[in-house]
Length: 144
Image (cartoon, rainbow, N blue to C red; front, side, top):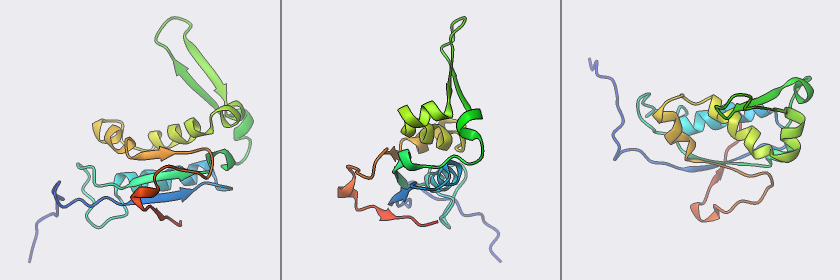
C-alpha cells in the first residue's frame, strides 16, 4: 500500500493554451472557469503549493452578461492611498469603457492572494473582441 502524496515537479509540468469564449455568458461563470484553468485544478497532477496551471485566453469580454441588477448596483472601488483618493466606478460604466478590466478583476479575486496567485495571473490574456494574437501557441477551445 502506497501512502505517499503526489507532488508535481517543475520539470513535469506541461502547460497548454486554452481559449474561453465569454460571449453571452455570465461574468462570474467565465471567471471561475478561467481561475480553475490558471490554477491547474482540472489536472490530475494538481499540487496546491505549485503553479501547475495552463495559459488562458478570454475572448469577447464586451459581450459578457451581468445577471440581476448588478449593472446598476455593483461598484468597483480603488484607492490611491492618499486622503480622498477613493475612486468608484459602476459596473455599467466599467463594462462600457473597459470590459477587459472587469474580467481581469473577477478572475484575480478568485485566485490565491499571494505570490502563487500573482504568478498564475501572468498566464492570463483578456481581449474585448474575438481577435487575439496568440495563434502561434495553437490554443484549444475550452467548453464548460
